[in-house]
Length: 166
Image (cartoon, rainbow, N blue to C red; front, side):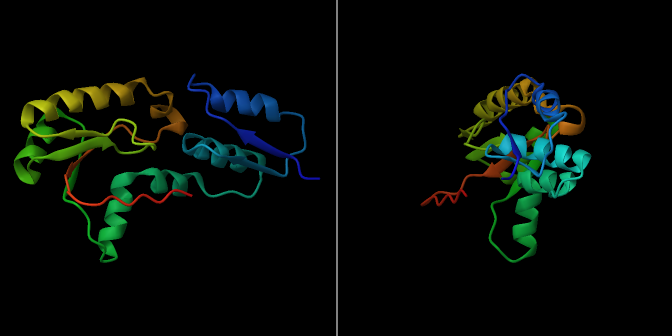
């Protein structure tokens, strides 16, 4: 029988510590997660405990939406114009260069959390403050669990949406 520790994100900022304490003293043969936010924690703990794992840096790259966009573009796949922004000045530059309407979203995350459509500059500024605030409150934006602290500003593409989740 396999002994596998499954982590579930607590949104308290102490998920890693909780998983470490639960895992102490038991023989572990694997670690996994069913929640995107926990994948980095699973990779870090697997590395710490000497279990098979995806390298934590690879997990961070896979969760970074801008890096994935760059990878798609480098492989000839069509991508929307976008910019990674973290300041008001970068937002104003993105509005001027990419235009409107647009979509703002955290550079990591899932389930469309923090994704906002904006139709004008005023909406873009308000949405930027909202999304940056959401990112600041996320316990995974600090330390070795950090996954992202920027916003993507993307040209809105009209049409049929296709979403593939595994």
